[in-house]
Length: 205
Image (cartoon, rainbow, N blue to C red; front, side, top):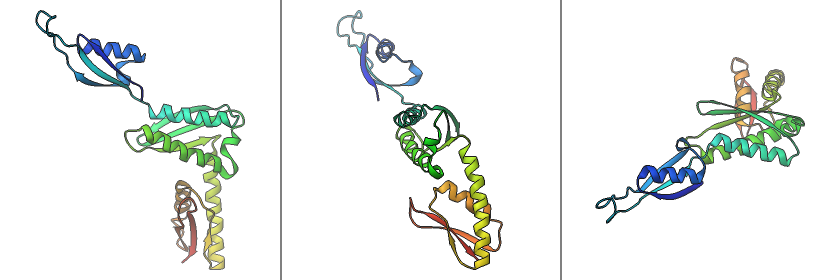
């Protein structure tokens, strides 16, 4: 966090001096008054300057976007990022050429990048935020694929009378499977294993 300590005849002057040094505006900073100063007799004798410490607030979403851009550039991908915040949920939509490199096989690269971005954003956020990364509508297409997979494997579990274990998935993908099958009275679903190998099991009732 960038911060400076500045002095002035008044607190306002000290703050103004600090903002000039940081090249920023007051709304993007936190101000701590170390000493309010003292005017002294006739404004000269026994006077003491005001001292303030001004810190630049770090925008967690900006830091997250910077992180994604750096990772993408290191992979040879020029990426454009749009961000949307809905309460504690932050969505980043990635576009650009070679975007498939950021998605990876079955979205594994995108999931890993999403996990790391969530760590970065929560290093700077005042409250815990959840992050969702999407590229080329991958999440929507993946959800459709997961729903079809869930229905197919539920039928298999009913037909064979055996438990069917799916591949490990992140929690929000497991939720898609659970939700897709919640109305099916012939089977039950539950999660098994520990992260990052936690997976869903479909069991016939």
